Amino acid sequence: MSWQAELEELRKREALAEQMGGEEKVARQHGRGKMDARARLAALCDDGSFREIGKIAGKGHYDENGDLQGVTPAPFLFGKALINGRPVVATADDFTIRGGAADAGISRKMVQAEKMAHELKLPIVRMIDGTGGGGSVKTLEQIGATYIPAVPGWGDVVENLDTVPVVALALGPTAGLGAARTVASHYSIMVRGLSQIFAAGPAVVGAMGASYEQNADHARAKEELGGADIHTRNGVVDDEVGSEAEAFARARHFLSFMPEHVGQLARRSNCTDPVHRKEEALLSLVPHDPKAVYSMRRCMGLVFDQGTVFEIGKMWGRAAITALARLDGWPVAVVASDPSYLGGSWEAKTSEKVERFVKLADQFRLPIVHLVDNPGFMIGREAEMAGTIRYGVQAMNAIYKASVPLASIVLRRAYGIAGSAMSNAERYQYRFCWPSGDWGSLPIAGGLEVAYKSELEASDDPEAELEAIRERLAKVTSPFRSAERFNVEDIIDPRDTRPLLCEFAELAWRKLES
Image 1 (cartoon, rainbow, N blue to C red):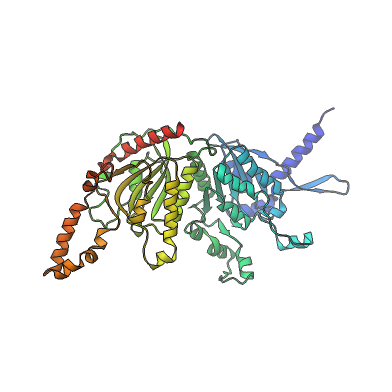
Image 2: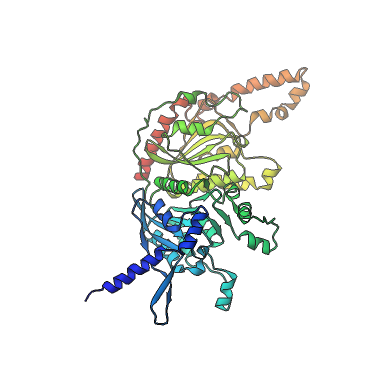
């Protein structure tokens, strides 16, 4: 006797699941400029690699005879897939079913997806579109009681942050639990104009009487409350992109730098960029005028393997650039001062960004390269109000706690406590300095008038005396004086930076692999 009838019912149920919220709601999703959940999974993963788990889960609808009439699928899809040929857990919210709300779904599906990631040591990608939370106010009347909130499986979300790479793509309005799932990641992306993130949406905020000006245009109200202009500049989300396709590409690119889990090492790629490439442009990159700025991003493009610099968090904490890159194919994490923003001074947000990034590098065992031009932590009343020194010290602590190899290149300034935070002085200093180096406990130019007040007051020509003092100190502050005392290890020709960093990368990975 055959099981053909049961297999036909299975195929029928699978076909119903593929309809998602129905033709009308899927069309409405597409009309908003959004891909549907199944199209997103196909676009994110390697061709044909997605194997869905729990496809037919949902709410069945039966007639009086108990025969199946239809199915409302669970608004959460997940399965095993390949990205760049490597296994991952891929998940997607289905906004066409009750706006992705959890009360229309089966919480165990989401829980099982998270468990699958850390128990099988697989990266997880969340494509989030909706609330994913506890449902609407109407749900309470249906239940007949309220309850103290709990999030099933949140412990697994926390476990994943400790064990595997977690990527979150906000692909629509995400509120409540949806917002929380976005933030609980190692790398997150919003799509400009398509994604918004908030603890509660405009209607709820307005109804609660919060100090927020509601806009009659609902789409604009969502942007004003939680659009990319807000959350990619306050550090809630790492990056913004212009399309879903770009979000998928960046997610794949990020994962290409990562191991599959903590305890495994990331992979080296084939490199056609010569290790001993020396760029003449580096010789004149840093201007002689100490107040003049230059492009640190240009420096990075010249030093690292061509086309491999993958910047993260460009729009927030802007005094430091954080990026993944490669040296002779070896993946590394890069922290670089940006003298074009606040002169490179670390304020609170920059320090927070550096702390998070250094912890990411240490967790996934990526050697760190620090390109230094830091005049110190930001000073002034606003900096004090923002708690800059606390965030700065936390960044410094992260650098000191990091156990992966770290190399620093001092291009120009390294002053004060922030200057000492550029590397761990208690360990071997794998460090090179450019001839443009300028360092100390404080910038000398800012303290001359105070330090030499009596000499200047006694002089017949204070301006000439001040200039003479400057000339004397310029000789004392020469980086070669520091090198005489071995306070700096090596002063190098800037053109040698790439070969020396490639040497560091090889030694660093030799240590990691041992």
